Amino acid sequence: MTPSIPDLASLHSMGAAQQPTYPDRAAVDAAVERLRTAPPLVFAGECDELKEKIAAVVRGEAFILQGGDCAETFAGVTADNVRNKLRVLLQMAVVLTYAASVPVVKVGRIAGQYAKPRSSDFETRNGVTLPAYRGDAVNGYDFTEESRIPDPQRLVDVYNNSAATLNLVRAFTTGGYADLRQVHTWNTDFVRSSPVGRRYEKLASEIERALTFMQAIGADPDEFHRADVHSSHEALVLEYEHALTRIDSRTQEPYDVSAHMVWIGERTRQIDGAHVELLSKIKNPIGVKLGPSTTPDDAIALARKLNPENEPGRLTFITRFGASKIREGLPPLIEKVQAEGLQVAWICDPMHGNTFEASSGYKTRSFDDVIDEVQGFFDVHAALGTWPGGLHVELTGDDVTECVGGGEELSADDLSNRYESVCDPRLNRVQSLEMAFLVAEMLSAARCPKTD
Image 1 (cartoon, rainbow, N blue to C red):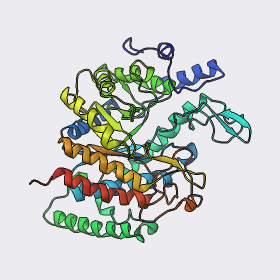
Image 2 (image 1 turned 45 degrees about the horizontal axis):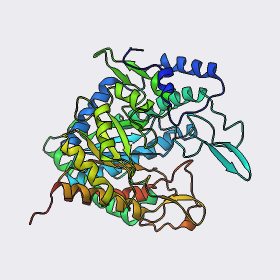
Image 3 (image 1 turned 180 degrees about the vertical axis):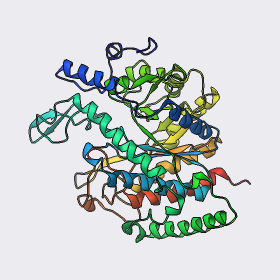
Image 4 (image 1 turned 45 degrees about the vertical axis):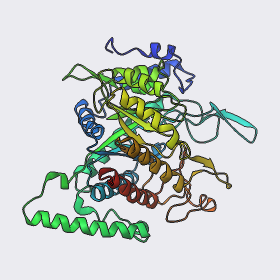
């Protein structure tokens, strides 16, 4: 490892937050050594391409759509599951692009989102206390003593499952599935029968007519036939991220080749912490989650540490305030960052600040709260004359019942029908598509603000 990258022991000595407590150090060392010799999952040049696209977002010329599972599972790595997640991202992106005439940078919470921070190290059920489930990267979901022991071999499993997922994503996006002429086939029966699905069908027909016209005049660019979908996840388990940090042969610079983009969570963004230290050294585009406790000075310090050269596209602030707090909490951050001349993309995570427990006992989110936070995000940027750069959403391509509300009017009583998330509730496909149309209207207004 290059001297510019601190070793694992140094990082852990900084009091690294949210790390597994492994019982067998030799097993950890063996897993890390195996990962250090594994081929990269992504290439440095691909990371640079994403950075250039995010630089366009910083300039107000593009919009980021970042979405996927709250926590991926090894069992979920199937062709159908990957295709379904990809399909909903493609549908949302085409709605946003067509309705708002803005290029959409597509980033999946995919091929690496296997670890989750927890508010408590332990979980108690019926008087039995066990270590909390921290994602398939760390331990098992089953509530047994054996399942909940952190196992470093799971980090190797993360790598292998991420490689399989990326292979599928690349096959789908370049092999014809992402062709814009497939816009109708992306609409499955359960979506097509909903009001938002019928609205999508109308838009798809308009796109189809436009493509037919373009073809008739001899225009058939390659971009019509494929899509770029970049990978991202929270850089949480230090052993995994450190082992997959490599020196690029072109530039001799370090890149975390576990994903195109990695982010630091709300619980691990301490300015003197291990996660900020490690990610300050890599050249990938990186994100930081900012919640209600973030002060303007916090944001400035993070930007200075993580993007000292003030490079556009390098740093994205992902805000997660909650619908009731965003209109008051976000403006001071943006104003201070703007006043300092810092090059930052701002995107909205309307999920994590709006979680509550339903009367039925399920952890859920209200679709109305999610949309209200997005609206607040756009309102704040409109008032300040800044660019609302993107959306970060936990979603699935399946017909689950995890978030209440939306056009389907899911209630707390419906949650038990298909609640499949192992961590946080996700928008289902109909809700995701409904969100895309609502955000497209906000985005269109942001592009062409009304004048007196």
